[in-house]
Amino acid sequence: MGKVSLMNKGIFKGSMYYVVPALIFFGILFFISHNGFLYAGADLQFHANRIFEVHRNIQNNNLIPIISTYSDNQIGSIVMTMYPQLPVYIGALLQFVFQPVTAIYVLMWLQLMVQFSITTWVAQQLGMTQIQGMTAGLISTTATPLLSQIIQQQLLGEVWAMSFMPLVVLGLIRLARKDQLQSKILDLKSILLLIIGFSFILFSHVMSFVIIFAYTVLFAIYVLIFKKTRFQIMVNLIFSGILTIGLTAAFTLPFLSVMSQNKLGTPPATGLTLWAAPELLKITLDAVLPTFRTDTIGIIALVSLILTLLTWRKQTILTKRLTLIAVAIIFSGSYLLWYFIYNTPLGVIQFPHRVLAIAIFLLSLTFVMTVGTIVKSKKKQLLVYIGIIVVSVGFSMVSLKYGFLNNANKNAVEVNYNVSNKQPVNYSPMANFKVNNDEFINLMKFWNTYGAFDYIPVPFAFNADLQSRQVVQNKQMLKTNAISIPNGMIYKTKTTDKQNVTLPMLGYKSINYQVVDQHHHQLKTIINANEQIEILNPKHALTIIMVKAKMPIANIIGLMVSFITFTLLMVSAIFMKFRKFDNKVI
Image 1 (cartoon, helix red, strand yellow):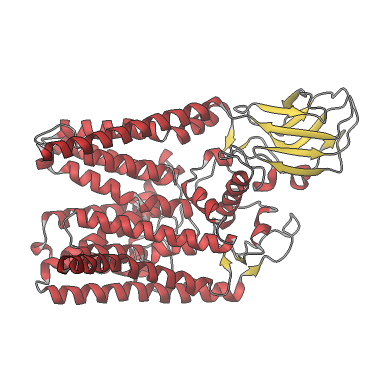
Image 2: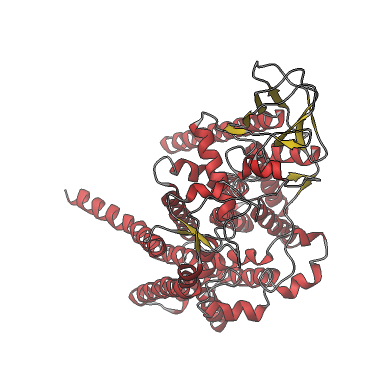
C-alpha cells in the first residue's frame, strides 16, 4: 500500500507539471476569447480558408484536397498543394467537435501545449530537473514575441513549425558531443530527433524549414572544420537527411512538380523595414516595453542574456555555447546584417526577424542553467523559477492587453455582413476585423489579401467572372450557380453551342482536368491567356458543367514514398526495442 501511495503521489506530482501550464495557456486565451470573438491577424483569413477547405473535403469523403474549391474564392487555386498542412488538418478535425472560432482557439491552445511539452522534454534531456524543464518551457512559450505570433499575427504554420525546432537543436547537440559517437558510427537517437524535428517543421511551414536547414548547414561547416569526429557526425546528418526526404515526400514531390511545370506568382519578399529586420537597439528596447511585438526577444530572454554575461566565468561550457549561438542568431535576424544581403538571392526570405524564436528558446534554457549555477539552494532556486514564470506570464498579459487587445476591441470591424469585392473584410490599417462562430463562414466568401493569390499561374487577372464565379461565353457573363465539390466545381448555367465557354476556374499545366457536360460527355478544353479553363466549341448547349482535378502522379508517388519510409522507421524502431529487451534478458 505504501508503494502504491508513493506511486500515485508521484503521478499526481508529475501531472501537475503539465496541468499548471495547461491552465495558464487556457487563461491567456480565455482573456482574449471570453466575448466570443476571434481577432484578425495578418494570416487569419489565409489559414481560415485552408482549414475550411480541408474540413469540407473531409465532410465529403476526400482526405487530400489538391486545389481550393470550397474556399480561396472557389477558383481552383493550387494553394492546398503548395503550403504544408499539419496545423490545417488539426484545425479541420477540431471543427468537427467545436464551433469554428472555438476550434481555432483550441488549435492555439494545443500549439502552446506542444511547444511547452517539447521544450520541457528537451531541457530535461540536457540534464535539467522536471521543475527546471517546466520553467524553461513556460518562459519560452509565454515569451511575448511568440504569443504575439500566434495571437496577433495568426502565424499558425510558423508557430507549429517552431514548436518542433527544439528537437533539431537537441539532435545537433547530441551529435556535437564526442563521447556519444566513439563506440558507433550511427547515433540512432540523434537521427530520430532530427528526422522527427525536420519532418514536422516541413509539414508545418516551408520557410521555417529553410531557416533551420540553413543553420544546420552552418553546424555542418563548423563540424568539418573543428570536430575530430567529423566523419561520424556527417554520416549521421546525411542519413537523417535521406530519411527526412523520404518521410516528407508526400509534400515535397507535389510541390516540386507544380513548381517545375507551371509559371507561378510566388509570395513576394517584404521590403527591408525595421520590422522585418529590426535594429539591435530596437530588439532590446521592445523587449522591455509592453508592445506585444514579434520582432524582439522578450524581457526574460534579455534578462537571461544579461545575467549569463555578468556571471560568465561561473557558467558551464554548454551555457556559454548556447548563449553565443543565441547572440549570433539575434545578429543574423537584425537590420545590421540584412542591410548588406537583402538585395542578394537571400532577400527572398520574408521577415528575417522570425529567427529570433530560436534565440528565445536557447536563452530560456540558459536562464535556468545560469540560475542553477549561481543559486545553490534548491529552495531559493524554486523561488526564482516561480518568480520568473510569474514575471513572464504577467508581462505577456500586460503586453497583450495594452499592445493589442485594447486597440482590437476599440477598432476591429465585425464581419457580420456578406463579404464581397465591394465590401471585403477590413484590412485598414492591417487585419483590423473580428468574427464570432456564426460569422466565421463570411471569411470564405471573398478574399483578396495576404496569400489569396499565392501560387496563382501568371499572367492572371482576378476579373469579374472569377470574382462572381460566372461562366462566360461570347464575352458575356451567364447566370451561373456554382457548386463546390472536392477538387472540383459544378456550374449550372445555360450556354449556346459552337462557341467557346470560359469557366471561372484556374488551370494548371501540372494537373489533368476532367471536364464533362450534363450527359457526362468529356469536353475538350485549353488553358486560355488569363490561365482559366476554356471549353472549345461545344457541340451542343450546356446546362451542367463539371470540372474535377485528377490526383497528379507526383502526389501518388509522394504518398507512397512517405508511407514506405514511415513503415520502415516504425519496423526498425520496434526491432530495436525488442533487441534491446532481449539483450537485457540475456
